[in-house]
Amino acid sequence: MKKNDQNITARQYIDDLIIQAPVAISFLKGPDLIIESANTNVLELWGKQANIIGLPLVLALDGNSASDYIKLVKDAYKSGHIHYGYETPIRLNRNEHVNLFYFDFVYQPVKDSNNKVTGVMIVATEVTKQVIARQLLEDAEERLRLAIEATGIGNWDLDLVTNDVIASPTLSVIFGLDPEDKLTHSELRDMIHPDDKAIVNNAYKKAIKTGVYLYEARIIWTDGSVHWIRTTGKILYDERGKPVRMLGTINDITKRKQEEIMKNDFIAMASHELKTPLTSLKAYTQLLVSKAKKADDDFFINALEKSEKQINKMNRLIHGFLDMSKIESGKLQLNTQTFDMNELLTEIAADKMLIAPDHVLSFENRQTVQITADREKIAQVIGNFISNAVKYSPKGSAITVEVKKLTEHLRVSVKDEGMGLKAKDQQNVFQRFYRVEDESTRGLSGFGIGLYLSAEIIRLHHGKIAVESEEGKGAEFYFLLPLQADWDRSL
Image (tube, rainbow, N blue to C red; front, side, top):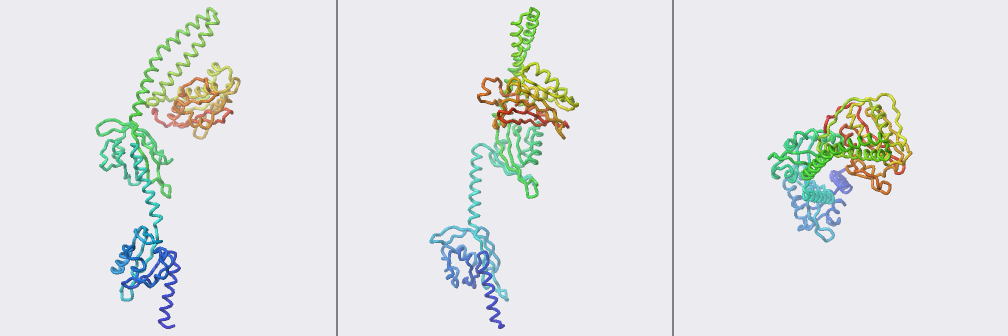
């Protein structure tokens, strides 16, 4: 084969490669950048037909609209150095309209055996859609950031590997700092109130496992004033499941907390003041009951016993409000001891049978089950379960109390045959002041704090409280207590 034939074959092979390439490729020859080869992809990119092959690039692409693009290619030819362009904005004439497009480019100078540049190979990929999509996303993020800032909520982005934090100006304001100053993670953590550092640390440990970061705590400004914040966040993990980043928001809840403290202080004061006259009233009532029994006066005996029941009801209500104020101010103490749960349940069942004679209350005392907890408060939770079962189930129906020892927890449950709970009520029934409102509960008394207090007591024991129910088919309230007691003794 002759040398010229070999050159023609090699040239044809290169042209075939260019034409069949899945990306836009063209070869421009000489200082005038004559289009010697151009595949379909590059022609579509330029918005041209194959008849431009053989023309200088400046004429083929209408120099005015593609001047920036042509200048970059000429620079690569003159310098002899490969040139990369990423998301390069270029205005091109397509369909008789000049628009802005974005491309990733490689301009590869082609040299001969004497190291002289003979042309430029162009490999290009249009990334206009990707760039526009990213710009729209960035625009949406910016609008979201502005919306968040307008609500007075601070946002932050924490690198869990380096501990570098990016915080919004509003976050600095919430912490009483200059929005222009650069914040550090350690600086923000140091501002947490010493008594609340454990809350923050526990929230972080929980977030590493669950991915959700949530806490309310106090911070101390540089001027010594105390403020409340609520922090929510979400952890992002790498492909190996390692936590690498946390995004979140912080808002100032000082005003709400101050109002809650004032309210709780008032409730505690009012409840405390009511205890003394109520105690005296109960003592006088019991004395009158005793005298009425001696006089064998059935009317007064019945009336006074009903009065005593109402006094007891009021007394329980006052203690409930006191406990609620203690919980919300973080002052409710757990007086823990080791006791037999079955023995406690037997005592409670015996007491409840006296005040609920119209229901069949059953509890089977089996082997001794030792647990370390606050005996009085656990009794309060169980008593509340049974009282609710009596209130919301028909006379003559069964109420079953059961205790089970699981692998790591003790499960105590109270099951009734009452009206049951709707799905939405099951989700909210442990919230403060929540009451089931429908025709079947109309006329039943209560403030909706019993189950809230029960949930908080179990939470302090690091346990779990829940309900399983089907509307019209009764409900089973239960709680789990850890068999190994390693919690703090107070909130």
